[in-house]
Image 1: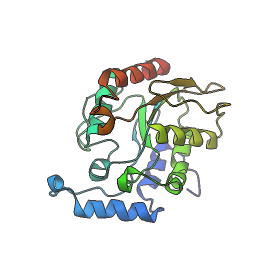
Image 2: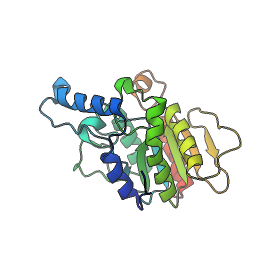
Image 3: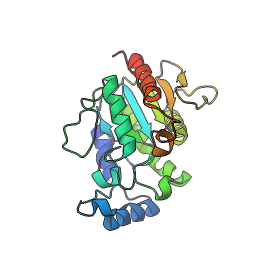
Length: 232
């Protein structure tokens, strides 16, 4: 981003047009062309994903990357896959979402006081962006952090998102903690100089939810803490 975007919406316009990572461009577009059999009659989005939610959010939620047949299909963060079912259910119970499911754009979903972004904005092969790809995407999160003037809480879904947020937070000119905070589910760190409460959270992937590593009460506890930090 040569010139800084002046609003959260302008950041998203630049995100959606991005073709900076050849491997990710090829993968997202090939996935959109081949499709999964159960979605063969749908038109896939096949592009980077804009952040989703309130541009004046007090809560920032940072995920890893769009799912190949979730966000890469629907064109919306955490929409159309099981991880999203868990996330939006928790957001609804905590009062950040007006409904507990996110199926497709135009389904009536609204977020209140929360913005969902990701460390990588394109679906990566094997759900694993490279360090270089994460670095290329970082300026988008940096600018989102700069523009969220009343940021009070951050929920990082998984260790990669946690690390990506901390790097982006420092790059945005905010005061980082003296020592890197530990990552552990529902472990919270108040960032210095009036910064937000950073809450680590296991990612609501099927690997975690189907094995019981992450349960609904565990996820609800994270967003209850975030709600309290936001003053809602």
